Image (cartoon, rainbow, N blue to C red):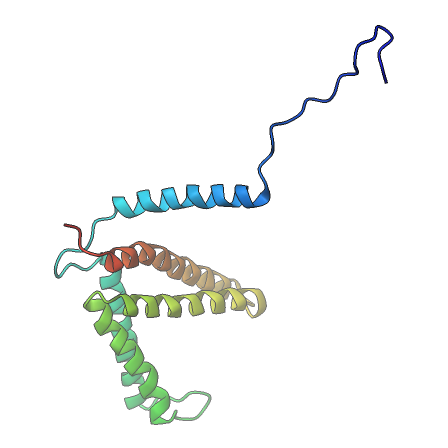
Length: 169
């Protein structure tokens, strides 16, 4: 509506051309890549024969799991009232044994495999907490398992990054 004094009506303050969703997304990716690059530069590559502590602990845990499977089978442990077939005991024992050897040698594939098992443990424990936990002791034990497996997983991410890094010159 024109002003009686002859002035033009004031328009709302026009904003600068706002970025499109694509431009906002590209800007976000650029910022994330800058942070990723800074994180990569802060990491030190592994020295010859070096192994991060969390990977060493993972190797020991994996070896203990493998040994416990073999010992359990040899001692005649029953599952649901029946002794498992040899292949049912041998397959996970070999898998965790190979993983232990690979982590002891600081191999990326072994750490990645161990993390995959940790993810299964985390999801299974969380699902069990929601569905099957019926006593306070079960809830406390499951929460402890979630805390240990989650912490293990978290620290293995950085270790994997260091294992994967090329040697700097």
